[in-house]
Image 1 (cartoon, rainbow, N blue to C red):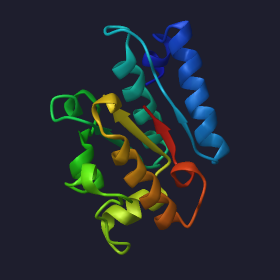
Image 2: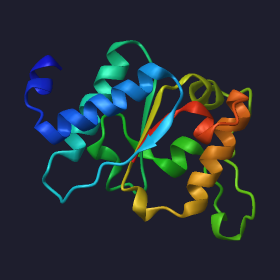
Image 3: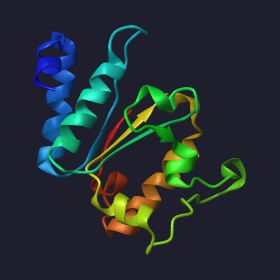
Image 4: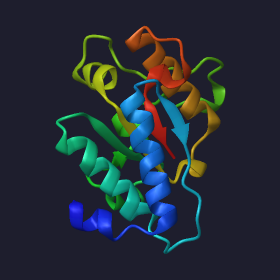
Length: 151
């Protein structure tokens, strides 16, 4: 991991530090990585995931498609990992299909970071469902229930 930190460009290091500071502060927040293909976004995302996990903290890696999910270490589709409703377009107040006593609920209550790859391929309501679910599970009415989200 330390070797990979040395490989970060100036812009990547700035983004890395911003995300790590958000996590350290514990107040949550949303950050977006925006750069053309081939600029190391997934390298940076995977480094951040590894850093959080090395501290024995939970970091989820999800993607909007099955093609994008393997690009992240431990990546799964958002639909599978978050149990998004199948009828998002017709749902007025979406919420993830996660029981408050399930293992997934425990993970969402304790996770520090959710990395969402290819987020622009998802419906807005997918994010609304995640937001409402983590707010409910964490009993925290701040944006995304205080979880740091990296898009």
